[in-house]
Image (cartoon, rainbow, N blue to C red):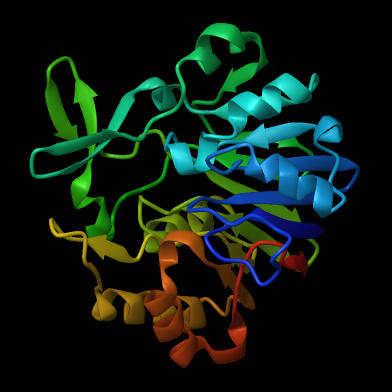
Length: 279
């Protein structure tokens, strides 16, 4: 399986766009998959430079309903005529980040649901969408959720309610050596995601994890902090489960990644824009 980071917050190549967002191109068998699609059409520009044919994508999996993972979807659908988009129906909700009185819409463009509803497949249960490609919709939230969720809300009528991330899903792909977990931001908690996958694939090893861990905590003054104790627990769980490799970035944050790296060492790498992975 081949994975290419089409866009992420960082880049080592000045010819590639970077932005606060994430999009992963995956080749599995004869299928070409996008896991998330960044926040703008810059992901399409990067795809051209990375020799990824947007018109040839077979399916898109939207990890959750935030703009930095689905903002490029409208432009994608105008170019690609065949791909189906797999997502949860809760992605239709009005999502906001709220810092004091400052409220900012961070959901998807509503015209996606109006103009391209025929291209959308709403998933509400564990589903194998292609041989050895699975979508997990019911994430068991038995462990701690990221503290960074505290500023994220769903607007219900005139009220704002804390987001419980019912709109989030997991992409899991079976390889010969085990299961590869793909996260968007892991708002439901990466520990919860690992436990959920282990309950479904009880006899199989988790080979790798690819995606963001949402370790950044934003305060009212927009300063960023990290829960190092929680990061330590995540690293220890990865070692306990003998997960061979972790590829992370985006909402994991630079300091979060550095702390994980001190514990996981060569088991972890950063998924900067243009990064190519072979699993």
